[in-house]
Amino acid sequence: PALLLLLRDLTRQHQVERMRADFVANASHELRTPLASVLGFIETLQGAARDDAKARAQFLELMRAQAERMSRLIDDLLSLSRIELNVHLRPTDTVDLGKAVRHVVEFLEPLARERGATLELSLSDGEVFVKGDRDELVQVFQNLIENAIKYAGSGGRIEIFAETSGTARGESTVSLSVRDHGPGIPAEHIPRLTERFYRVNVQDSRSKGGTGLGLAIVKHILNRHRGKLVVKSEVGVGSVFTARLPLAAPDSVAQPEH
Ligand code: ADP
Image 1: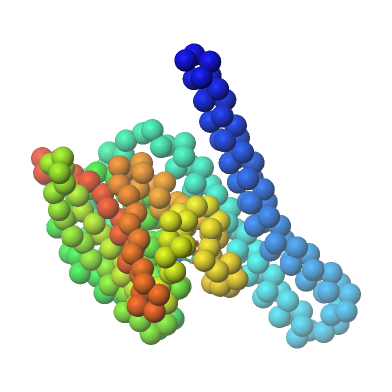
Image 2: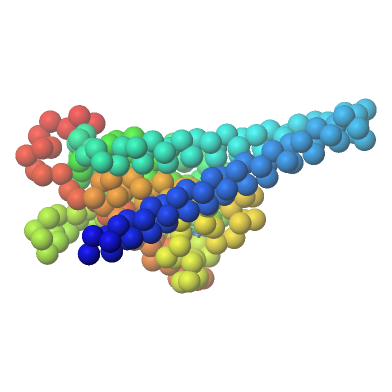
């Protein structure tokens, strides 16, 4: 049995190394794509478009968009590694869920308006509390609501609501859902959505400024909070992304910090 255990450990170690190598290769590729187009634009600006003021302005704008994409990608990569480092620490803030989500909704309101979407939040401040890391939970809600705006926005309603329930083990949970009426996601993609760099449509995600890391970050944060992400979606009807979290014990919410 000792030999078997050793073999199992070696296999696991090999898998982890393999995943790490794949991740570095993917991340490098994702950074190289915008970098290559910036280099291409520079070459054109120094050559054919040297004296063309209009083309110069246009290329600078395109270069800015690519640079912003690289910057977002680096932010997301850093978020992921920070969350991974913290994964064994239990978050301790008492977070007012309604308040945290309301801040995210207010922050994303301009983007929603720009895309012709409306955000409908039906959860008030002071109603539901969870133990957590406030900044990380804000990132979860921001990624989910931003995705709904990006992929399902145009003209649609996006509903954000919470439901609480008890589990078999006597622990109470809250489910915070973001429902859109967008194109929906074909069933075969759903189990893979939280993989790093997985997208249903790479071109579509890139053109919307996506990094392919948003849902991977969501999953990691929820794991650290002993929660999980549940995705329900139907093509042509829309999607519901639900973050399920354990509720804070009532005695711990007497003096909420946030
Ligand atoms: P991205 O940066 O590409 O948005 P995410 O990890 O946030 O990466 O999402 C992964 C993929 O899941 C997206 O590329 C998109 O194809 C799909 N997706 C996420 N949210 C929605 C949604 N609300 N409606 C349709 N597709 C979605």
